[in-house]
Length: 416
Image 1: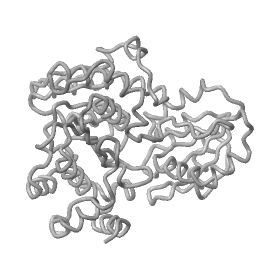
Image 2: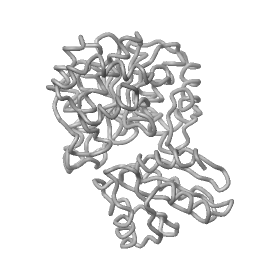
Image 3: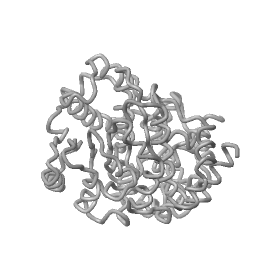
C-alpha cells in the first residue's frame, strides 16, 4: 500500500472520532491493553508526561516538548486531532512520522489490527508508542484524546500528570456537570505520580484534591504556584492571551520535573524553548496571524469555555470592521457559542469538509436568532474569499469555531 491507501484502510477499519464523532468513541482500556501486550509494552521504554484537560492540552504539550528539545532531549509528541495531515499527530523533535513508517506499521500489523478491531485512536496511539520506542526518545509528551479515565492513553504510567482546566465539552460522553467531567479527567492520576492542575477552579478543586490524596500523589495548582509576574518574564511565539494560562501550567510542570530530577534543563533552555515553541514543534492554529492587510487571525477554540477567552481577546484587538468566518460541529453548544460572539461583526457562516460539521444554513439560522447578521457559505474557502473581498486594509478577519474550519482555512489560504 502507499500512504494514501494506508490512511483509507485505517479509516475504513475504525472510524476516527475527529471525522464521525461519538460513533467512533470506544471507552475502556481492554483493546489498548491487548494491543500493548502484543506490541511488547513500548511505552515502558521511555519517560512520559500525560496531559489532559478541556482546553489548552495541545498548546501545553507543544510548549513542554519545545523546552525539553531545547535542553537536548529527543522528544516524542503525541497529540490530536490533526489539521492537515494525519502525521501531525506523531512527531519526534518536531518532525512528523515518515509516510513510509505509517505504511510499514499497518502492513506489518494488519493481522493484529483486524483481529483486535481497535478504534482509530487506539491504533494511532500504538503506532506512536511503537515509533517512539524505535526512535529511542528520551521523553514523550502524550495528550489525552477524550476525557482521561477511559481514554486509551491511560495505559501509561507517566512521570507527571497534567490537567489543564475543566469546562463543559463532550457532555454527552463525559457528564453534564463540571464535577462529572473533572472526575473523568482526574482518572489519569496514578499512584505516587505528581499531578499539576493548571487552573484552580473552586467548583472542581476538591475532585482533584480527593483523587490525589487517594493515590498519594503530590498535587500542585499551577495558578496558585505561579503568578502573572512569573509568566511576564517569558516571550512566546504563540500569541493568544490564553497562552499565559498554559504557560503558567507549563512552568509549574517544569518545576515538578526539575525538583524530582526527571529531566535536567537550564533557565536558558526554558526561555529558548518557549520563545520558539510553535516554530520547532510545528504547532499551528492558535491565534495564528495569516495576513496583515487585512489582518486574518485563525484560532481552534471550539467550545464555549475556549471561545470565552478568544472572544475576550478579539474585543480588545483594534481594527476597522470585524469580519468573522465561523463554523461549528453539530455536537457543540451552538447557542452558548452564539451568545459570546460580538454583535457588531459581519458574519460568514460556513461548514468544514467533515461529516460532523453543522450545516452552514442551520448555523446561520441559530446565530441570526441570537442577533448576529451574516450569510451562509457552503465551504470555508468560499467564506474566507468573501470576507477578504469585502474587508478593507485595516479590517480584521477572524476564522474559528472549529478545528476543522481552521484546517480548511489554512488549506484555502495556502492556495490564494
